[in-house]
Length: 460
Image (cartoon, rainbow, N blue to C red):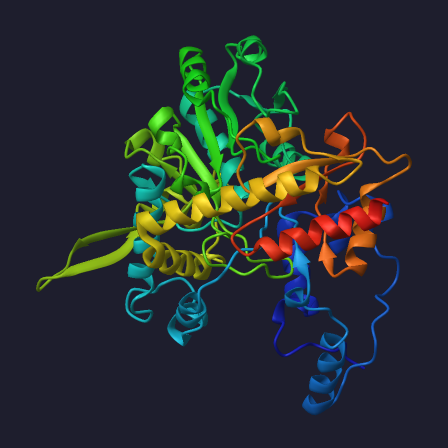
């Protein structure tokens, strides 16, 4: 009996499969997975349930799974650390839900009318926000954008060294190490945990002749605002390196744009700009830089540019795609995909709605409410907030003096009150259990007071 040949997967047939393996110079498919450790590989076949033969059965099964979830709308969320609870205007959902944006792929010139212009508007609005001329369409997330910008800076400077802040998100730092491994291993600069400020003396010591890029977060991972930006940029440039700054774009309504104090590349995540906290998604990054040929040539993404159209008007199309993996494929210096463009369109709608004055007002509201929350929490017996005497934006560290207390146990108890507590940052903090709390415009006074009361009960 002949082996089954799938009609939709022709390369799985014996003949084409053998020719592919021969072209790769390997005996069987197993050789492709040799780099994966044995303990991470599934033995045998996956334990999957039997297929559902009818569409109605599948719909019923999925509905039953969904009903097991507890919606975020039923909880008070005080956790950020990279994906934050912000208000999403209804118009953002209305525009990103339109068929020509929601179901389209990448902005085909003749088949996808309007998407290229929408992405161009995103680039322009982010450029105005960060004070730089060239902005990429969205990348996967802020971590991916920062990693690509660091690699680009190293290619521009011809150096391999990368310097990063010691108090980065450990998960993001691990991702960075993996991404830049062909170039370098990041080395950390000391920071004062209570203030978040970089140790300038340690920075100068780490700025050796091999360093091509320095990464700085503003605000920092623990919410503190770095007040030495210009001094850091001066030292980085004097050493012949480039400065890559990761920002929370919403903070730029109240903080100076990094380009004003010396950043060469600015990266960040647009999730705060009208994008919901989706499970495992909702994040998208960007890279911004000056309009210099040597810098633009190293950007990994496509760019949308405007140009005069035949017969008048303006057209929008991909610009210099030969830089990207779309053209260079396996020889590319970096990789790029178009998966997050929809979020860029939502962010453009959000920025258009708020405008400069709205962003400034929103930034002020966030700082006022987060300060109120920090003070309210600090009044709870057994709780300390080290950031109270320093400027911070949206997030702040809370530490606990109760013997034997853990962030996991505290958060479990808070969840019983309908509250999602802060992100566990104890491993970054030498003074015992610590969590990173997030307060945004979505938290009114009643919500903050409820958090403080719940904490007091949990710790009593």
